[in-house]
Length: 70
Image 1 (tube, one colour):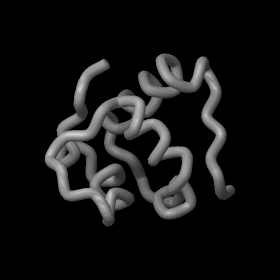
Image 2 (cartoon, one colour):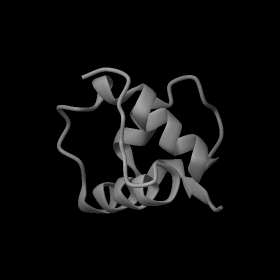
Image 3 (cartoon, rainbow, N blue to C red):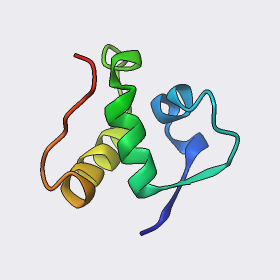
Image 4 (cartoon, one colour):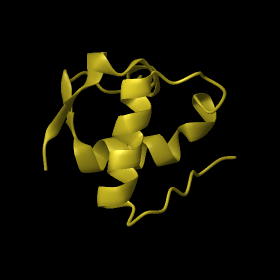
């Protein structure tokens, strides 16, 4: 498991309003994306962030992404 540089991913940075670290573990980032998806679901994601989310879904969601809000 690696840490993610939060400032490289604008949508992730946006939903981490209560997080002060510069990096976050991948599994935690995946959980945050799922829990707070409704805050960024209409945001146009950068290509690198889409790639990250797909990687996290594969590695930590076993191929599934189950956002808490739709």
